[in-house]
Each structure stands twice: as structure tokens, then as C-alpha cells.
Length: 168
Image (cartoon, rainbow, N blue to C red; front, side, top):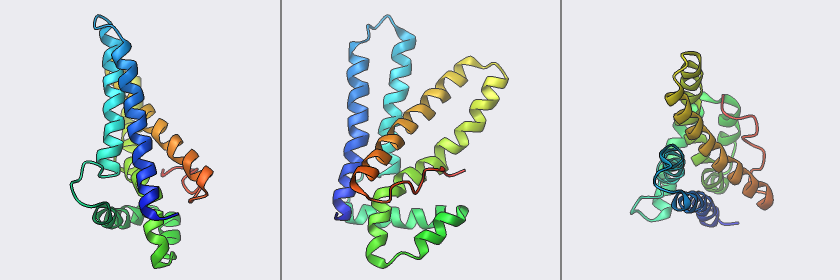
């Protein structure tokens, strides 16, 4: 499978999650403020997976975007020795596939989800229910996208299971 097809599939999954959430939000009455707030937070996390993880809002051609993402992943993987070793052993033609399939999740886990987890624990320990509520939704939305991306990788035999233990 060509790396641009993989990139498009990852993008489509994030957009699908966003659209599904928007549909749920549209069905919630305006007076249900807490439910609407939760859905808005969730929807925006799906958008973030697209915009920040995949650089899906870029006006650049996808080849150039993937080149930028390749640079980003090289920096992040320095903190994850097993993944970095795997990545550095890839042949040149495999690197684009790896980046298209995994970079967005690696980036989102490293930059958002992993830092959110201790924040969530602190908020729950401090009984800050508003903060814990928001963080739980943010983490959950990202995990929803990650699970969908992994399912796609399994179905298409594109680096399945590589991130199964997460980036801790």
C-alpha cells in the first residue's frame, strides 16, 4: 500500500470520528449544557488528532506534510529506544509508510495523552471534578482515534501492534 493511501486512511478515520461526534452533538438539546460541553471537548480532540497529529489542516501537498512529520517523529523517537531502534533500521522506502501509519499516534501520545494522564490523576486526587471530567474526555477521545487507527493497521497489515504497549 502506498504511503499516501495510508495517510488518507488515517485522516479519514479522524474525520469520521469528528463527524460522528458532531452528529451526536447536533442531537443534544441546547439546555443539556454538560452533555454538550462534553461532546464539544470530544469533537475538538478529534479535530486535534487531525490537525496536530496528521497536520491535516496544512495547505501543503501531503508529500511535503509527510516529510515534515518524518522530521517530527525522528525527534520524538529519541525518547522511546525500542521504537527508535526499529525506525532507524527501516529502509528508506519503508520510512514513509511507517510515518504515515504511526507518526500521528506517536506524536499525540507523546505530546498530549501521556502528559494528560498525571494531570488527570492530580485532578481526581484533588477532587477537581471539572478538570478531571475534561481530561477524561480528552484522553478518551484520543484513545478512540488510536483504537480506530490500530484496527485499520491490523486490517491492512501496516505495522499492526507496534504501539500496543503504548508510549510510556
